[in-house]
Image (cartoon, rainbow, N blue to C red; front, side):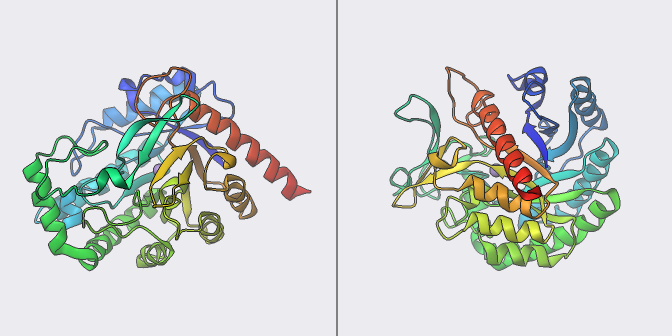
Length: 349
Ligand SMILES: [Mn+2]
């Protein structure tokens, strides 16, 4: 596996020199964050990312994300123009050494949580989703500002988008996914890039918005639309694992054996009885996921793709972007290194 770490570019409070000090760290996962979805990234920005990483002994070869615009997801009149920009972004990234591009197909909002700094008994804080904090909220009538939701939308724009997705429905979204994949995957193949689809987080509809990247049946459907190793998954254990219907180690075993995992996001979540969940430390004992079984499934399949520790807690007084501090993600990386070493040596006998 290739160990990687997400970095938000020059505005990230964590310097590349710190990331380079994490044992076994190889790749930086980043993106050009100041260009709107549907637009082309300046080559100089991509080149600068590659050069900055190289100067610290790191490789910029994973992009997270090239966002899929709402126009592509909804299939508006701007779709063709936005897909053309998407293809150009894949070509430009490949030119500077990118091998894997992460993206998702979540309508309107990416991840959804109700609180970003829930304190645990030990004083650490993490992201949580508590259903009792969501109950009674209706984005069509209430002004809702949930953490992680794009603040650049006005409430009226959000309402317009929610109505448009309501009319589109799940099958309409699948149709637009098919149009996207049939355009993008051949170009990714040409460029030697693996497209890695991130699942919906959490993997079920929110406020009636269609969300389809949720479960084994739908992942199978997605991968079969274009049956190519370039059409792969960014298998996020915490996103799929916050729904009890997903058996995450089994999913990892299956898709790794098929050669259809380009990128692994590994983190732990604690599922609560009402379906709410809390992000926890990476260690298996801290949450509901068996991280050892997940790593063992990867090693058994001979997985050699990218892995990164996903969201961490805030610990040791660190402040910064929730989920993306240095300390707990570095602990996660060290834990993953240990599991990979143990599983790899046990496999060799
Ligand atoms: Mn993830």
